[in-house]
Length: 354
Ligand code: FES
Ligand SMILES: [Fe+2]
Image 1 (cartoon, helix red, strand yellow):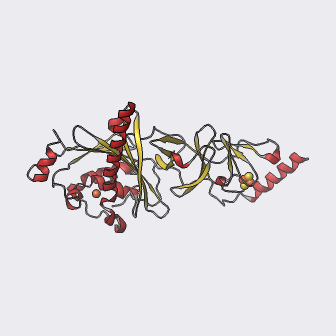
Image 2 (image 1 turned 45 degrees about the horizontal axis):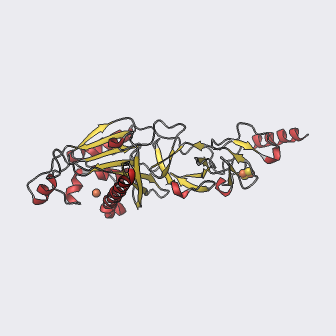
Image 3 (image 1 turned 90 degrees about the vertical axis):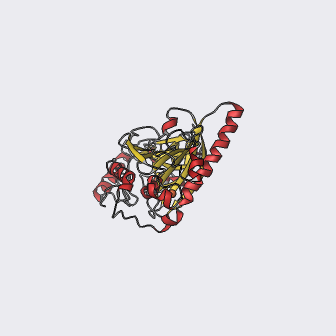
């Protein structure tokens, strides 16, 4: 199957991607991070806001994470040029304040939620951070759970949760327990909802069916082909997970699992939240490790789709239409300035001195 976006080794869909845990970047700290093959200097200013800049200084390309945070800005270690959180250079010490607006490094929008720092791979975010459909607009409690690696593309990891056949063949659930309906919600978001009722022709089936009036609750909300929320659990208690995935330099998946729940108030509410979040994190471990063997050796090649793969096909079709980010372009380290421009700059500076 020929695809432009799905399982592509370089394509970056425009969207929110996880960068780091909030607690990994303290106030006044700058850290070097790499996201989808791009080097970044990410810092937290004195006001607590996180900013993400392309890593290499506009002057000579020193890595800005070697520098230090000053208020809400970042100063390069090498010749001490200063960059504001929006990437604009606001001070060149040896020019006594004369800085043209063209001197800047690329800035990327960031957000902080669920105990994580996120980056939008484009100019301006087209929407807020993804939420669990059942929790939209509600305050959430979150637990940053396990981090994992899989030796295949994030898109391939995500289809696992909607691959109906393998729930019987790998996870030994009763055969017809899942029947996923695809519901595209926006250009970036597609939901999958289970319509299948628990079959009661086995002891396990009869046991599970006691907890469900209608279909077994199993709802996925997928964004950018790399972030997915999962809602599951009996009618009286829904658990919510978020799997935030990104492609590492070697093409493998770097995953971060989050457990989420509706924020309950008071000391008892706090306790209930903690218990639910830790229970959810245990369920997440099962999901994340359940098919590890396959993800170590698979070379995904979808040569013979069958009708039972229709949810997977709906996911691929939806992903193929998503906007790609201009992620590889601009400000590559070591990119040479044309010699004429360098000469002109030297002349301008000489004239300024005289
Ligand atoms: S390389 Fe950053 S100020 Fe010179
Ligand atoms: Fe699985």
